Length: 232
Image 1 (cartoon, rainbow, N blue to C red):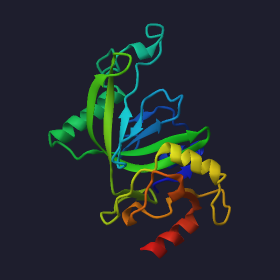
Image 2: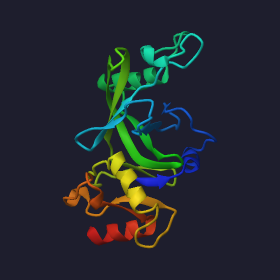
Image 3: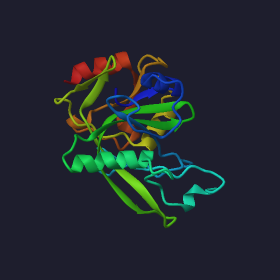
Image 4: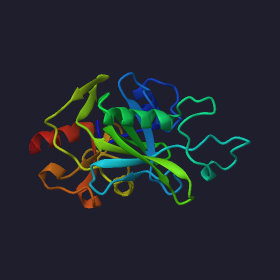
């Protein structure tokens, strides 16, 4: 469920693996890929929520740090390995190219965002629709992938295309951090500390905004569902 607050262990359990360390995971699941993003000050990559509030730009990943590449930030992000195999950057880029050439549907990507140590937000499913290979501030080439909001939900490990689901703006990371601190990591109604979600007090589809902390709060899943029933 979009904007669910989870732990690192929860995230790994979602994907059925022991550890999830790479930020880019092409086809980690048979039906979708997974990316881990962060907008924290010390984040190694420049991931952003776009101005439309409905899409994400995700930076590709650097060459691995080795004796030959002691400072990966000095080198172009690679599309292929030394042996000629596609890197994660290359796999994601090829998926975009195949989509644009009408060879396949856009790749479905499940996005998780790190807010604090041990605190993650499940941002939901997005469609990988574009990329560019461009210079960054270090004058090296990096991949920037564009992901657009989708209507896909997951229930009992099954993907469901909810075409009637209203569009919902992505809650900015800094807003989530402020709300987490303000609400003390608890449901504002009952004080529960598990099965939590970031919730628009007034949904975007009803004229609400994701931009200020005044319109976002933490609810447990029970009160989140009760509130949704009342505003439909």
